[in-house]
Length: 286
Image (cartoon, rainbow, N blue to C red; front, side, top):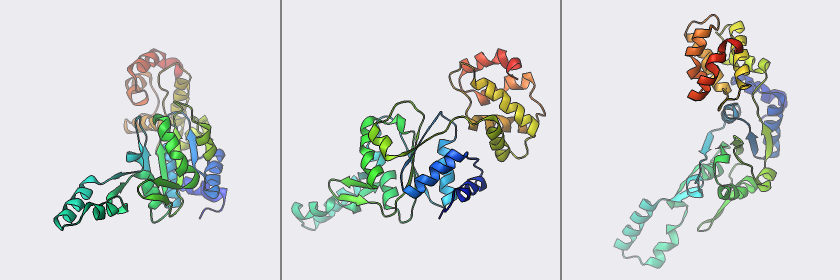
């Protein structure tokens, strides 16, 4: 049980996550109010990582549903185990059973394969359900989620309504590629995570890489902060900054020199056009 904001923040810190006060408050309220939490923000600022840390901090299993265009309930909720159904039918036919008797049981819980949402609702202990990058899914799927998010239950026509054995902690993430309906927003608490300020990003990097020299870490943050101000296709995420800092560490860098920075931009930037944009500006950005 989490009984206070300070306790939750301490659990995050113990699991190598450096949250700001708004994040701690949003997660705490979502826990206490038993409401889903919709976390929006640029790619790579730690939204998915937050779900993983909540799972560790609460000692709950993490069930993840990765969203994509065309995702439907058969991949998110359940699908029928057609092979098992066919074997069942063949067995009963061989035993002389008639169709009226066979079809009574063929669409039952025994014959479906639970997918992430149904797994979360039927789990024997509370879980964390991560619905990742929901903005990549279609509006039809968003509408399908409303019952599960509001009432922690789903209705399957052949079976009926299945209610949650234990209410899961539901976290939805979005990279802001599309707007959501008011119905979805109304069912969730909202949290926006942006790129951290320099002080907090320094804290995050040193937490992840305790062997990294603090002065070098400060220079890394200054450089990447300046890159984020440029007009490029994709700004460096926190994860990519940590990887770049780790690259400096394993390369034995004591300082950021222009040659090493130019050669290692492939770690920090993911598009060749961005690298070409930043390459001639390295000296001034440092």
